[in-house]
Length: 458
Image 1 (cartoon, rainbow, N blue to C red):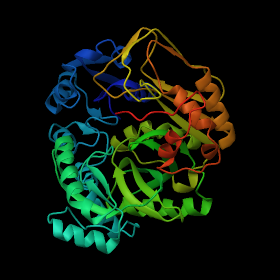
Image 2 (image 1 turned 60 degrees about the vertical axis):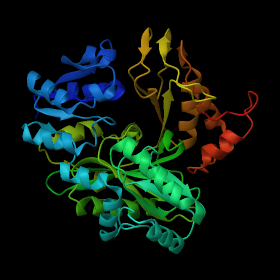
Image 3 (image 1 turned 45 degrees about the vertical axis):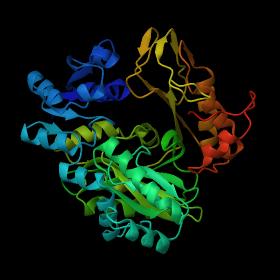
């Protein structure tokens, strides 16, 4: 087992890794930017190293600075968390060269699955259902138009690298394709440094469902069930839950086996997520694989009782998985709400000083946050300040428990999205489990009981 792990991240995920390491008896090293000197992950790690100015490119995304911090402190492994360098094949390769263990998949798997066009081809070969589309990046507009007409509009133009909705454009008519391709290419180049895009069939109002997998270095792979991630705005997830209200046990077994076979086909190790679109007829199509820990991993931990972060560390240390698929038991229902420091009506970020921060406990409630009273929410990083996770005997109890938790949470000094979450939880479509990625578009267009409509951010 590792003696010391450096956490190449910040905020609540850095704390999450510290929790796991403390329970395993492993020392931790926090890295931080100049803006994060007083953050909790710095306080609770055994050692800490400042790696640069506030700007992410100069600190949390600075591979030489991260590696230097690991070497200076004698860390024998690096956990990247999620975001920042978590899917950096380059960091994983540098770790190998420096004899530091990267807690994640092998670099060649990260690179393969990070290229969505290549990943599509590999998944298709492995028998995973995929949407009709181009076999690789688009290099000719005439061919792109011909293909789009063959598969039928609407289509979606997507960046081969990255995610989060950047480098993506929906095209509903032939005349829109050329502009969409050029715009997506420019956006992808600016966001990811790679301007390649590909085309696939666009599914109207699908569900976004992902399967969590764990694989060790001895060929064992298990899935930990699915998460419903359909409640999202501009491709950013807001609420996640497990299990999905749409899946039967038979479908869960079927899709779970497909995911296991796919993971084995690419020799996947450590934790990862295979993401799918489910159309209104219940058909699944592979979308992408995330070669890292996911923000929403706690809902899976709540329904399975399996600590995914500890499993990541043990697998990276060379241990066997230690359980088989038949040992994975799903109990009850879990929901997670991402609490952002944003105006709940305009979605404009709301950084600043938190005067009061109080979240209730009670049965089935889990809170993951770096925030506290008298803490400053920086404008330099993602606006998520907390994740509230609840577990109940069934979905109805989980919804009721989440409502109670949100209603009793007090955060003063900044605006948060708690009022938005309460509105969503009370929505009849949400309560009925009628979810899709277009849910928020319909929801935001409806009148707000408090008056007016929720305005889209500019």
